[in-house]
Image (tube, rainbow, N blue to C red; front, side):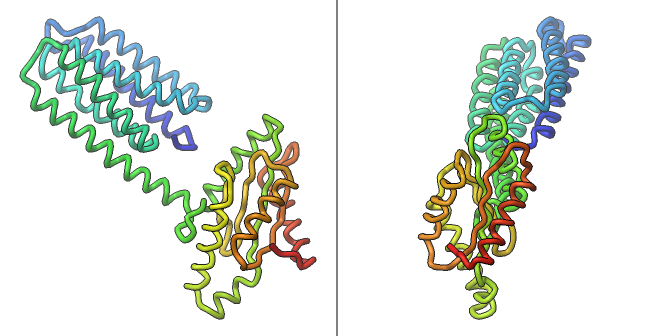
Length: 309
């Protein structure tokens, strides 16, 4: 699930509302005398009310609630397919089915999107098979294959775009924007729970001399080697990011200052190149700016004293 919930909530609310409006139109102007008017009327209410609720509570929706809402749409489409009176009505559900698959692929991680696509195909196909009309197998199979293909293609594209937007292309660690967003969430969580949280600024010593003496290719290789060694030693919850050219930042959840220094000593053992570090523990009322300012001040003191890692 993406960190910013506003756009996913907006589009999910729109998906519900548009589906509800279409169901309302079908209930008011049925295309067949045996059309399930009562069911489409109920689904119209579910869609319109559901869309309004999703938008109203968009700021408080959790990831599992997005997944539940998308799964519910799949089940309701399958239910509508099972009560359809004509083959055209069944195949006409295709745009809604594809829209659900594309939504899941764009906003959820790829394994979750695949699971939603599998659920979508299963429940809608079961509904179509249970319906009275027949002679739509070829069109339905084509539709289901398209849903799976579109979901996979969009999911892979979305994953690539997310990686490009959040990752430093040289070192593979989080870029500044992504690191600040995740570190801000860690800081907010620590403020709620009272658990310790430490931050560290790492600045490479004499990095410019490497570039001047051996070329930028050697400097790039050094950055990759350093971050690879650090990443191998860090815990899964620790967050390493590239803040500038040769400056890196660490967010260390559930770690006080002494614990942070122990971790940084382990990082120093991964490579012979020297670097300086400033550490700051989160305090009550801190923002990311204030805690990083203290880490930067500590880094300055370490550099003045000549202490390096």
